Amino acid sequence: MSILNSIEEKIKSNLHPTHLKVENESHLHSVPKGSETHFKIEVVTLHFEKKKLLERHRMVNGVIADEISKIRACALHTFTPAEWEIRKNEDFNSPNCAGGSKIK
Image (tube, rainbow, N blue to C red; front, side):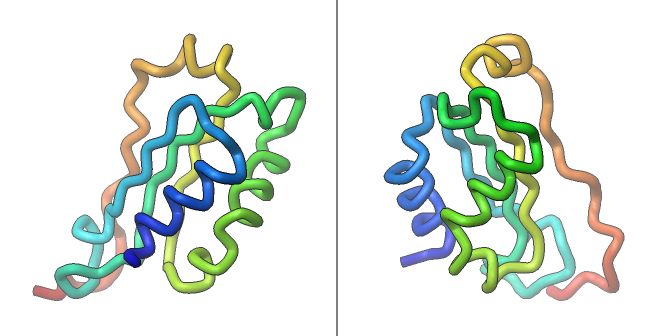
């Protein structure tokens, strides 16, 4: 199973999100083609109610700890359903790669 699929399955079964988007952004970085090293995750769940941002990130990181140990970077965007209603139309674009030379 791919890292992306494993992340999706674990978050779905543990956090029961109302919205989940997991993107492999590795192609934007200096890694070989087909890599699974850089991810962006948007998670919306009631489990984040009354949780600070750091607590939310720790929750997600705990759920996908095995996958985190295999990747280089993971951008997390964590929201309650009420927060998501306000921010769902925003762009959560990751910054451009500032790493070394591109690998083809």
